Length: 113
Image (tube, rainbow, N blue to C red; front, side, top):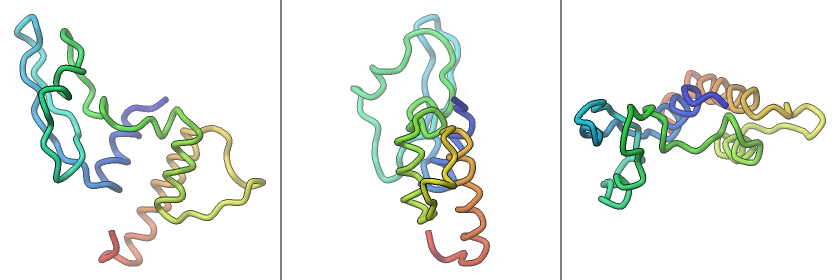
């Protein structure tokens, strides 16, 4: 699983935005994470974060690079057509392929998001 890839996907394809995370229980490790746009994080959301330690910016992102089903859903979202024969079975490879496809289509049609 590649959490950096997952973070890149939600930021570039889905438009997730950076939100601040305050200090942890030890008074350290303030950081920023990605969160869905047009939504305000609730206290319940913040309560799901680890109490101690730095949180990766893609902590809340779906695990596209680690779950084949989610990687397939990502491919459907970006309208990437793959046959069962051609489809990679490694979710990280498939997620990267979908992100590359997205980038390619955005270069061709920059007004479609």
